[in-house]
Image (cartoon, rainbow, N blue to C red):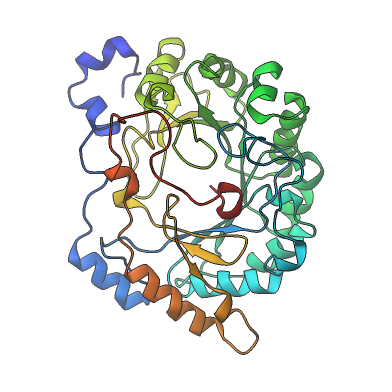
Length: 385
């Protein structure tokens, strides 16, 4: 496959549409009836659009030590903000019970989120227990974690030893001034880079860096990030700025599309598209033509992928959400008492997932009639990303 650069697009018929399809095209192919029958035979569940339940994002805490402007802006989350008291958080036993129930329904990957999950004391103990779970096929459940990286250097080795397999670090800039402005923290970028290096040294792989790109804010950081991680074994993924979390001033004009970010990278570093069955994968991946690793682009706004979404989210308060943009969820606490078994909990989740018809991003009006969010969303620090 020839390397991709913007001036080659016209000479590769069908290339761009196949990888970043035009706006308005289906987010994913409809699942055939035979696939749904196979899921049912395995004991798994599909929603009203034929999407199976494969991924669980498990939030362990609603606190965060950053105040990122697009997620938890300080004006909405001041120092005295009333986060959940520790006594109200789900216990590790309850979190494990939830995870076990979801694996009964076909979940194969559990991602630990927050808030900032490394703020949860003793997280290694939970990881160790989750790592003992198996899928319906008898394989180990994949355990991953998303973090801002501030505490990762001190935790990477113990998390790996506990059974964590992979980690994704959020990093929106290499320039200290841009990073501090976006994260609203006094920490230097070097602190995050130290965490990434510690994770790499501990063998947490594949190791990914997620960058939310805002036009005119940190789009000048795209090439420095690619350049820094090229050849390191770390894959950088650029995410379109979404109207979620604390992005109350969101506007279409703030979005640098995945295609635009890709073209920018490809002009400096020739890229080759990776052959991939995208499925529920959020990123469209490329490799550097010279063998320097991978880069990914997540077109969550311009090319939504609702049609292939297999992710459920359980918030730190025990509420199940079937979409990142959901405003209402199902409290799982009634099934978390000692007298209720994981099978009963799984049945409650099965019933809720079977009713699922979420596809907000596909239905999003574009262009927006006015700046700002036009759809209320659950607090991101509570439900996780």
